[in-house]
Structure formats: C-alpha cells, structure tokens
Length: 611
Image (cartoon, rainbow, N blue to C red):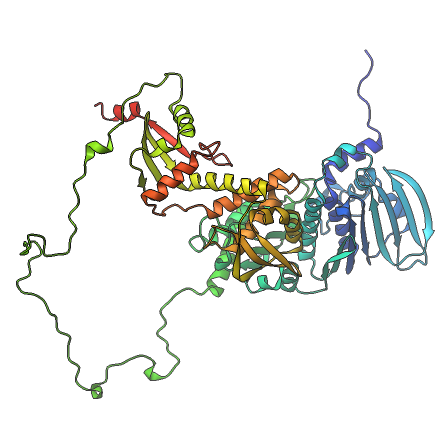
C-alpha cells in the first residue's frame, strides 16, 4: 500500500493560515496598522479602493525595515518578537506570531517600500500569491508603505463570499475605530475612494473618543479610574440616561489591544442595575493595564479573545470602579437641608405676620351614604350596573366535533382566514393589558396584542415597500441624527429602502442627517432612537440582500410602532386588530417566529372542572 500522507506546499499552507487570519479586507487593515504601531509610527495613513477589493494601502512613519528583514517578513512564523515559548507570556506588542504578512501575501498581490532612518536607500519588494516577483533598491521615505491589490485573486471561493462594498467598508471602519481609540498618541487618516473619512490628530483618550463618535458623546461620559497591584483600570462609562436598546459603543482594551469579554461586560452592566431599563445598554470605553504574564492572548487567531489569570478578582475590581464612578457623577435625588441662599428662602412662621385662623371643616350631620333619596335612587352619584344577559353571550356557540388527528389551532386558523369576522362573533375581552380573549368553536383563543400588531404592521410595511406606496408625514421640527462613519456607510446603503417605508432623511455633512419625514402612524416614537436601531440592525445582519434588508427595516419599524403591553383597548380597537390579523397570510407567528395566538381546547377547560 502506497503512502498517502504528504507535506503541504508552503503556498497552500499559507492560504490555509490566511483563512484563519485574513477573513476580509478589514483583517488586512488590522494586521498592517498594528504592525505600524509596533514599528513606533506616530502617523498612519490608510487608503482603500472599493472597500478593499481593489486595493488597500497603509503608509506609516515608523522605523522601517532593512533589505533582509523586508524579505524575511513575508515568510511564515518570521517574527522579531518571539525567541522562545516563554516570550508568548511577556508580550508588549500587537503582532507576534509572524503569520500576518505571509497570510496576506498568500492571497493577494503585495508591494512594499520601506527604509531605515540610517540608510540612504530603501527596499522595494513585489510578491504575488507568496511568490517573489521582484526585489530592488529604491528611494522612499523612512517607514513602510504596504500596497495590497486584488485580495483573494487566487482564492475565488473566498472572494465570492465577500459582502457588499457598504458592509465591507463598515467592517473596515469598525476595525480602524478600535485601533484609533486605543492609540490616541498616534495620528490617523483614512480615505475611501479618495474621500477622507477620518482625520484624527494626536489627542487624549477622551478627545479621541469624541473625534471618532461625535462631540455629543463627550457630554455623556463619566470617567472611572482604579489602581491596584493586580490591574489598572482607566476609561469612561455612559450616563444612565443615555441608555438605549441598540447602538451603544462598548469597548474593552487590554495592554493596548481590543478584546471581547462577555464576563467583564456583565460586571459593567450589573453596576447599572435599577438605573436603566432592562434590555438597554450604555456606552463604555475601558482600558486595562495588566502584567502580560497574567493574560494569554494566543487563544484565538484574531487575538480578540483573551484569557485572564484572575478573572473573578478583576470582575470585582471593575464592578466597584463602575459603581464608584456612577456614585460620584450621577445626580441621585436627595433632600439637602444645607441652604446656601437667603434666610427667607424657606418659609418660616413669624408671629409678627399676624393671627392665623385655623381651617374649618364643613359637613352634613344628617348625611347617610346608604340612605335612599326622595327620587328613590342613591344619594351618592353611583351608576347602577345594567343587568347582563349571560345567555346572549353564549348564543350560537355549540360544541362542534373536530378531527382527532388535526390540531385545533390549525383548524381554527384555517377557518378564520376564510372568514375573519368569525374571530369575534362573541365578545372580545382584554386580559392584563396583554392578551385578547375570544371564544372559538374549539375552545378559548388567546391573542398576544403586541405580537398581533407587529404581524399586521410588518405585512403593511412590506406591501408599501413593494409598491412604493408609503405615506410619509412631514415633521414640523426636523430631528438631527448623528452617525459615526461606520454607521453612516450602512445608512447610505439602506437609505432607499428607508425612503420606501416613509422616512425622509437629508445629509447635513459630517455624519449628521436631518429627519424631515417619518412613516405615518408612528407618532409619539423616539425617531432618533428608531433610526439608530434600524442602522444597527442592518450592521448586525448585513445589508447585502435587498429583500432581507427590507424585511429587517419593516420588522424594526413594526416592533417600534406596535401597541405596547398594558395599553387598554376598547371593543372597536380589539375587533379591528383581530380582523386585520386574520387577513395576514401567516397570523400564527410574528415575522421573527414568535407565537401570536394560542387556543385552549374546550376539552382541556372541561377537564379542569371535571373533579
């Protein structure tokens, strides 16, 4: 039997490694910019064409590389930061495994110009699919200039799965923001197709946050700081009144590296318990400094998941720091008896003001609330309840036999779809401000009023989008919504669909948009929060397939505009809602799969009283 195990060629091994490290154009920018930071750059420029599909260029003024280092940097596991295994637990830099440049070169055409400060000429290297095309001396500034063209040109399957330019550009901006936030002492510039999206000068951490996400956010931040022998925590948290369901900016950084950490996120959010509504989020920007030996950053290819040695202790320190910040800077309603104004600020009884007459109580001595009046009614203005004809409520209800193998809810739904008016031939009742109860042939039907309205509105909005027949209602005082560059990119991609629903947005420049019109029927909603929610839902789910985007917008708007739990409905409103529900094609479930109605079979109800 012949041998079947073979060593992979370096080019194939590099492409496999690239699949873990280089997932999209944003991954290339992350790796190259982090290399620039490690090289001591004080200024970094990023230029992308077609969201990185055509080209990505990163220019820095770092220390550069020698001719030998420039060539060796593209080999797998070639690194200046690791000499032995113990070095993995004493890292103070970003990249260290030596896979980034090799992975990029394996799936793209790469051109590098670099020069050291003490050399007159630099090095110009060109590679394509891991193969060296040329290497020569050149005249160039100190630092490094990477140009990456035709990403995934030799892996067409990977290139095919790239998202739309709007989505990929949004991912690029997100990665860029993470690096910019944690390196305020470095100036950054970002250009997309020749248009400047970011120009961030050297600043403080708070100034950098405001420059990235807008000056309005600066007024919403509370500083926190704590120093212990285990960890140093600095940063900013949002005020409770700025909480919202979507779109909160939440960032953790450790030793200059962005990380995701659900455990620490829970520590922050628990400090806000009872201060913000359930399900809402606040922004935070928290920077950890810890001994490198106490963390492991090598547990994930993209190094965004980090393992801490003393997570439980850090959880307690972080929670205490957030609570202390909230206690210092959040105004808690209290009674303050230390008055700083004039003595007469508080009214005080003064005998010289004259004699005060005590109030007198007037009452009827012979009044009897239970005595009959001369007219034969009650003395108090009570309305006597009208007698109820209970037999009339159940008139026409008969026990019809159902097929034993057919679920009752399916039979009833099919019948009601054909004859919607039958849904409320009997009286409709509202229970707990949440459910609508009505008798049906097989038993008792319970309808969730909020979900039913979501189902109805979703179908209505989808029909409006399909026929461009939405009704937009102009606003007297336009609301202004501020977006970060990554959010604005997605907004532009879904603006046409938002217009089809009924929104009228006008760009004011600088990421600001004026909301001049909104869909009719959503009066009383927070328009700014609603628009932000739509944009962030599109960011989470992607904005590539037009039908999916339209469905997402319709669902977000339907959930926001639907009647809320606890809203009291009269008979006409309940009848209208039930009628509209059973004209929908699928009344049983909301568009996202939540149950709308349920039928309790008559047999189950009878069984409860059979004993």
